[in-house]
Image 1: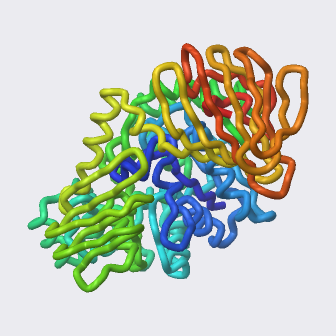
Image 2: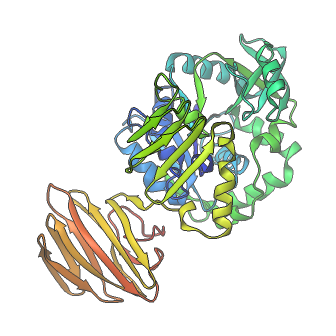
Image 3: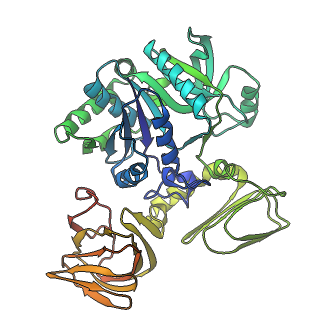
Length: 481
């Protein structure tokens, strides 16, 4: 039995300001309109002889993941979510998934770990590589996927192949190499023994746990404790991982195990693989003009070469600029040299230290019922444009510190306000006092748009008490609505 495990917990800080912690890169739409998570799930579903898919992600991303899957889910597949209280890197996520599968499916189960930020265009070659990895995993190897380099990348880790294994296109791993300098990366490109470390893995769960007991016993012990505490509270397909997960060491699976174990093998892959981890990688997904410029949105470029312009509304004009990334969103603008796009994560770290909201939220936030856009915010007030999809509704809720005024600008709103229930048409309004039970619903076939004016001592997104929710969010804090 091979069980795909989709890792969808990273914040994607190098793709800021489009990627934010509340809307990270697996949910960014690509040129074809699909998200990275959508494509990863499709790849997992395309594999032969699987009956179950696991997604491990932050609890705040559960509904986003579910919405992605709802239109794709096969009736023949069961799906399980393992929801982290906080991100602790890849090792804790993979180990927790292994413990879960060991309990549910036994020691002979094989896990296929798929990060949700990869693009692979040739599914036939991908499936062949997975079948080879399955064989290698069943032979006792903890298996990784090596990608033949097509450019001297300094942002990727590398694998050096050792002795060949009995299965074609597989080798023992001689060593893992951290991100090399450009000269070293160019030398690796010319060698048949060096491959990009893709971050995809395949392994027998018992062999993985046995190797962890040797090379990372304290990490394994802490996760076994967390798993035990989690199982006291969960017995269904949506598992909320115990908060003791927060105290587990944050470490990658490469550092925790792969670089230490002698039982690691690699499947060498020849399919087209892209890790969409930076603006440089994202730019490569789009066509460029005769001057090497790529433009998404509105822009006028004069005497400008080799630039990437991303505009979400405003006209951008440039004169005499070269080799720049210009990423413009309604509330944040990034300007970076093309060769330094990996360093964008430093911007996000600085925003976190200063507690600036733009590291976390977009001005427009997607919800399962629709979306809201913050139009203006000041001392003790906030103004929002709220769009509610047909036959959707916000939760039944109240607020401790703020009152709300609603004005309908499009559609018909069905309102619960205290002990009253009524409808509002375009140009009509209502007032919801502090600590009043309320809800707005759209019972029609068209979008409902309202303007909400919040006023009070505190207008933060966490001022909400939720009593009833169509989308099962009773145990998750999602902020507004």
